[in-house]
Image (tube, rainbow, N blue to C red):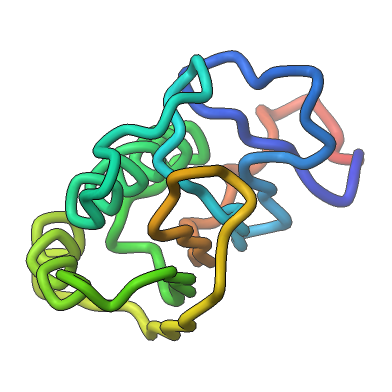
Length: 141
């Protein structure tokens, strides 16, 4: 049994990428830094940090669901931003997704991000429910 499971979410993950969108190790889920790039690679919400934040969290939702979790399981986020313009409005987007229980958060201002046009990149760590035991008659590992 591998030490971790790659989680790709509802969409196929392009083979050209040399990283996984998320990795589940036991009950921990590590979500790679995500920008608001759609499946064709175009930025959703050009120039709009709020729209980009919402799109990133929508991508998180698919990964979390594929791993058996939800936003209530995220315990930490790290946000890399290229601008503070309208950044305060991203708090409303966090409230849409996290409701009443907020994870820890770190915000970092950077000179730029790898995806052209990206104003924000977010990564996360979640603590998921324990994996169910294997069906009776099967042995783990």
